[in-house]
Image (tube, rainbow, N blue to C red; front, side, top):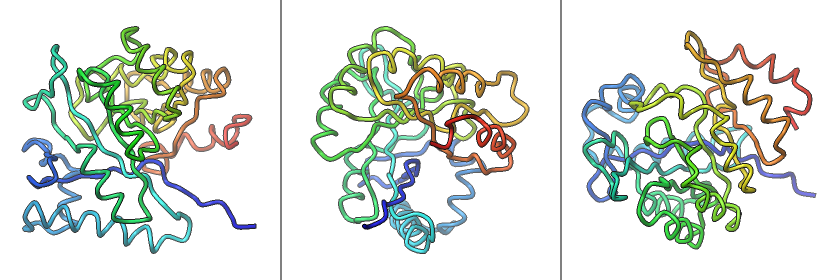
Length: 258
């Protein structure tokens, strides 16, 4: 019997070229994380070259991995205004679904992770479109995409996720890399509405915030984890220097590793 594939569900796709439709704001490019990415892909390469090298590096690391077979590449939707239109002036990082889908279609190692801000005017239609295009989940970063997951106006969105059997991978805890509008949008308790509507929710970073933050969400995540069988967590950044102290608590919590 063939062993099951090991899939990393949390791998960000970044791009900057005009042909990709993606962009990263100038101030975000000065963020330490993005400076590191640019250093690893070549400081002086143009936008098209950056896009190509970034994908090539992900492929190389995946193919050389001894533990991981495939990865879900994640698009990243932007901030939307009151009319449901993309607000380019406030969006710091934008990676469109179509570009992510195209990259994934070119490489068997990648699976397509779409991103749909529920504030966009065509949010329900976009969910149906990305599902038809092969998306395996939907990625959110509410802290930086500027919406509150607990808002009851998103109930129809959650019902559509459940209907389409599209898991929701959503950031929980504090966000450190992309400029934030409200850190409290990373509170796992704000996901109760999605869970109550039957959506499968993967709490990115398992509700952890890291060190030296005024609010700690991990306890709330564990409490919800015990109450909702449709709530999962991912281990993104957990082994990093700011979050590794959570590991003993995770290993000791009954059922966590299941």
